[in-house]
Image (cartoon, rainbow, N blue to C red; front, side):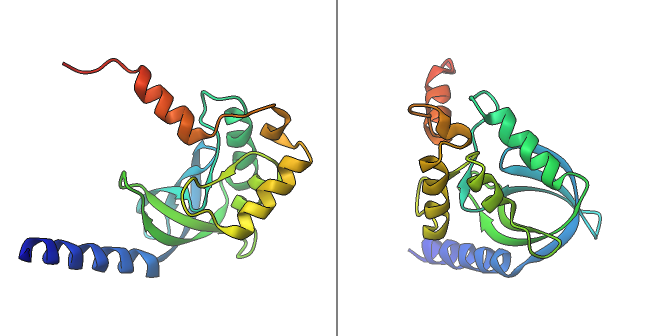
Length: 163
């Protein structure tokens, strides 16, 4: 029981520490439609996944579109990132602002190039996504687009099981 309490306290300290952290730097790579690589002002390199959205994977329809859209908006630009913590795979998640005000998550949603997250979607983002869907923008031109989390699960199921 004591080990569980110590682990829980450690996790809370890490989570709170990340939630308070803000970094600035230059975007040096756009990995996909919702993940970037940033070299911070202190020369540390961070891989940041955009908090609250999920773009199509590169192997999916509109995956390349989302990546190119984000590249055009953010590559080689100076940005500020509010770290929100880590996801269950240990990736850093954050909110990125260009010039202190432009939020690429909203731009991607408005263009129909991203979903809101599968779990606990941000209500404001859900409205933006539904507006893009109603207008048939981006991936919403498709009859029944596959969400990236479903695509990832399907890909995992196709991988050969290690023996």
